[in-house]
Image (cartoon, rainbow, N blue to C red; front, side):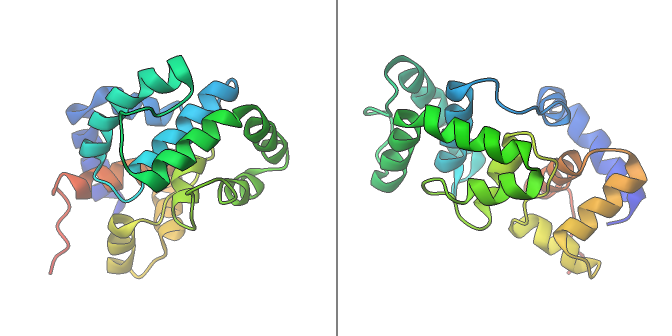
Length: 188
């Protein structure tokens, strides 16, 4: 993806969903243990699921998490349900671990994220982004775009970040959204 293509997609994404674009541009670390646990819970829920489906489930689940600290009957996936309940129950301890990791830099936060329930080798990047780390998630969409130019996902997003002045996380979101909406043409 060229810088010019990136600028084109960024404009499209900003017009398509200005609120989401604003959120990704201003992502900051969680303010407290509950904020942290909710962000982790959302990523666990979203893992391996279309974001449109996850969004609907999240809108049903979030009030229960805030009110009771548990998923309740809002969602049925046993592994994710157990993991989300575990994060909510232990949010103070997990948040303290996050704060210690944050004090030691982005790489430590990324590795810390992988120690959380249901967070794996790719999902740790998604969670890290949602916790305020300026990093790209090497998901299938970004891997395809990067492969087209012979780059890694960090290389692609770093290059476009440097050229555009946007954060790596913003570049990640724009490229992902362009693919997800079918705007990016793989050129096959």
